[in-house]
Length: 344
Image (cartoon, rainbow, N blue to C red; front, side, top):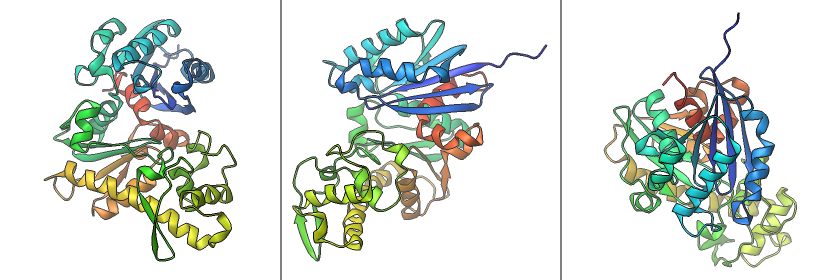
């Protein structure tokens, strides 16, 4: 009789996305990311769980990590963690493991008592997996909203901060992402025909628009509505970008708009580079950058700038080739699914 496969489902419950992966016998075979705007209500999480049900169907074990406790529908992080734990307890029967960072995997009841460890610990899960797979590395995970920069030394996560506040101070958390970041979050002005133009501090456009104009955005990674709710095309992005500098799209040529877009992407990279230089500290020059998330294009540029070898998280994890990209975009969900399995 053929032995039944061991199935572990991994979940990263974020404030903007739900990421779900399926590992069979220690290998990621399915991965999906669904837009889940928790700030609009918990029913969005319910819908996302229902949509992703085929991914976790029949799982022997469900492993969870989260950042969704930050959503402003919750009065505090503790309240957010408690609510999300209740959601998982209600929906998922059987074995449930909650990733509590430095405390490892715990049950739901214990997780409720360790909310400070559970809150926003998804970076620790992915970095821990990278430590097991790659040894020494500068791990950088750039998602839609944030960038994690973590030193891994002697096969262990060598973080300075742990909480969001501590990691913001240490440079290990940079609040900028590949799609959802407001443009005035990466720059206060932009050069237009040789003049540095102050930006309008309105949410007229996002960094996704800049990356779309540059042709480096995979549309599957931009799952939320545009700033004006209109089409996600190069023309639509140019119209939105134009508003940031008080202009209309017809006032500049396409090459000129590309230069403006390139400026914003460059400003974002500079912020990440500054932080990465601090986190890398005295790491040896031959230590690579391991990059994960939807912003791997930007991380490759960071590696070139820091003169370090780039290693794609998608290529080092055990996964079916067809799902490697999605498994990397859902890196924390992949990490908890693999870490909760027996191979580690």
